[in-house]
Amino acid sequence: MEDFTIKILALDDDPFMLKLIEKMLATMGYTSVVTCEGGLAALELIGNPDNSPDLILLDLNMPEMDGLEFVRHLVERHYIGSVILVSGEDERMQQAAEKLARAHKITVLGHLHKPATPAGLEALIGKWSAPAQRELRADKKIYAADELRAAITNGELVNYYQPKVVTSTGRVMGVEALVRWQHPRDGLVFPDQFIGLAEAHGLIDDLTSAVLIAAFAQARLWQDAGLMLQVSVNLSVDNLDSVDFVDRVVGFAAAAGVPPQMIMLEVTETQLMEDLRTPLEILTRLRLKRFRLSIDDFGIGNSSLAQLRDIPFDELKIDQSFVHGACNNEKLWAMFDSCLGLAQQLRLESVAEGVEDRADWDFVRSRGCDIAQGYFIARPMPGAAFVEWLPTWQRTFANSKKHV
Ligand code: C2E
Ligand code: MG
Ligand code: MG
Image 1 (tube, helix red, strand yellow):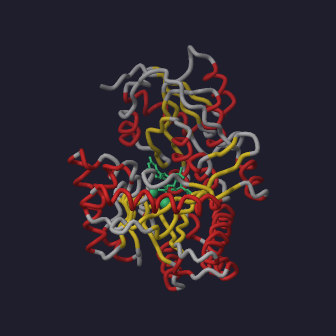
Image 2 (cartoon, rainbow, N blue to C red; image 1 turned 180 degrees about the vertical axis):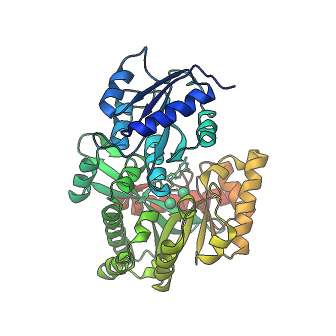
Image 3 (cartoon, rainbow, N blue to C red; image 1 turned 45 degrees about the horizontal axis):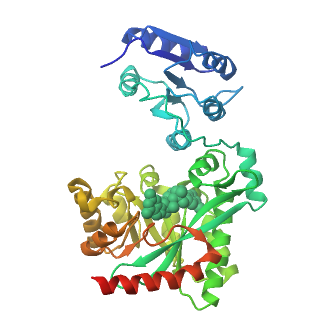
């Protein structure tokens, strides 16, 4: 049921847009609407508990304080209402902003392209619900783009590595590099707190370069120690829009002395759903250079079969939401099986992510999924810890076989 008394704040630097939105909301029947032309005024309003809005319609592109900066202030003020992004930015930018806000546990009901239509607005406002409780959110710190830029330059980003295991033999065939920010004051900061920020502020190319260089150097160390491990690296789709990206990756691998066949490049399914032309070309060129390609978090987006057919993927990673607990849940089981079936029919190597416990491990093995990754095997760890972990896994696996 719609609640027409919720307090709505519309924030936009364009007075004409504000008038338009105000009118639409009035027509829909919302009675408590205020507008602000700048972030500072809006923050003042939010600071007062009596006026604090339940819902903010937020323009991303404002001269005085942009929408992302405004979101940062919302988090600092523990705002618990919802947000709808309304802007003229392109789809990718809107998605990055949405992801960033969600990473900070701001409830984002969705985004609208300007000019917003009454139907679009109504549909998103319809998703509003009162915050369940004034739950105390884990205080995730919000970082500014400049801090991240400095961190990349100062080498504060480090890779952790999570093993991938062949389910039929227990052999550790590779690792996935997962970036962390070793923050001088805040300790280890996880990627959900800064990847969206990097994408939104044009820092993702530098970030990915840092991750690739470190991952290749680590791959080389393992190679020299006689460990043949495939190393996976996550790419952002924003990396795939500059033509020199391929040359850069090729150059990094050559400099480290790592054969491209040993490198798996992951792109998430949801990021691939939009305009595919440039990513398709760049991914295909990487494949021609013998790098291997993986489609990550598969199953939660709705990529078309044609996309899967057109990009020369080698691996399909089934999203962890269909893995953990699937053995006791009919729906998850069905989703898992259909992702797996697709991988098998397309002759892609199948990887189950989020194998958290023994039941998950037994399940993915019994379904015939090729590779498993998850806390049951190991949590991501610094590169140097891997050689110590490896023999403990080999012992655990050998023992577990005796018990079957
Ligand atoms: P992802 O690529 O799907 O990576 C898997 C995530 O699941 C990792 O989170 C990993 O720590 C976590 N995980 C592994 N096993 C389990 C399990 O058994 N249970 C549960 N609940 N979680 C498990 P992490 O490291 O926080 O990374 C989150 C996401 O951030 C990654 O998801 C990836 O999309 C992104 N990311 C990480 N490193 C990079 C990077 O270098 N570049 C880019 N563009 N994105 C990155
Ligand atoms: Mg990944
Ligand atoms: Mg994943």
